[in-house]
Image (tube, rainbow over all chains, first blue to last red; front, side, top):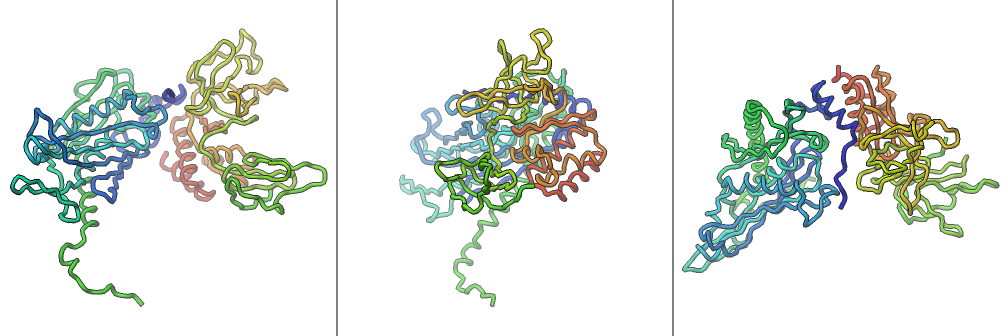
Length: 297
Length: 246
């Protein structure tokens, strides 16, 4: 099992010196600036490709009909699977969850599942017998720091983009229509939570940065992940160990996080609208047209 | 000056015999990327540009690989992983076997006066032994003269990752004409004071009094490498970065 590559002593010392004495980051970003965020949707519904600088994540949402859990007959099943493989970075192993992987899946679980972003009651088909099981697979294609924020964005984008097949209940018979028979319908979505991760540096955690890349993550002394939606409703705040940070600083971090989440939300809405327009085939009237395409001579 | 034939070859292709330089007395020398299959076949093993030098009767392939493969005589920047009884274990690239650097392979080093290097420190060394079957070995001193020639531990500064092809171009004697790399000279002309060491394993160490200078040099190197800028574009990039810095 390869151990994670460690940056050299020179690099660590230089990074800290640049941050604390000169207040500059190595790639010239501001302390509260994210790397360029890009989102593309796949041809299929529910495939979201997110890249945050050199960190690239692919999330795929899918659904199938199964039996609901015995203790929750009126709810559907919703799972998020994150498995870090050597594709992300050579020191990850399949089937042997490293600390990063466990933390990532816990944060995504709390942010998206426990906050009720997806209405699981709307996934129920026949109480106690049939329900939808929605599953999101998160694949990390490249790891350059800040997997949490990028993964959460990808999961939310994939779920909002996803369409499940339409169903109908008649006389106790459940019919699931194929996409050719009836247009698939979107999931019952309540709110869009996003994660914002702050990293702290210095003996007392005085310097705070948003969106640390891999090198900065190796040198940081503490980190806080705040999950909230654009209405300011906080889903969770996770600070798992590390150097203690001033409470006032944490409150400031939360308010800046709200601004960033609003930006994410607007960006995601824009991308979804653009994708919908691209897929819109004009509806019934477009299908009934009998005109030939004009030939440009 | 080698004659450049802009011929791109793929592994396993046959090379046109008219391109192979011949000389009455000097035998043909094959450089990296070519393999000789007796009696008379020469086959490329990597994809790249075939370069032929008639004056030295040699031919080789210029290629930009991903993983560094140590070869004898290369100058590299390594990171000390740990120290054993008689030598240091030095990592040349992450997730590859470590190279060994003897404790006494430094200029005028004896058991009492040798440099004590801690784990994580950087050294500029030369590869003294490298073949497929053994872990590579390094030295920080020229074994015939006993002088260091600039090799040894690198203190302070910052190291940046670049691609292998770019590192090779930086190390060329005539980097401006043959390698088309002018970034470092242009940065010096703008008045920045810094020193660099280039490792063939894709690492460039930069040190300067001012932190901003190092950051600017690092960004200039990275962008030239990632975007494959030509000489003119490199000058423009340097001017832009220096202006932003001031």
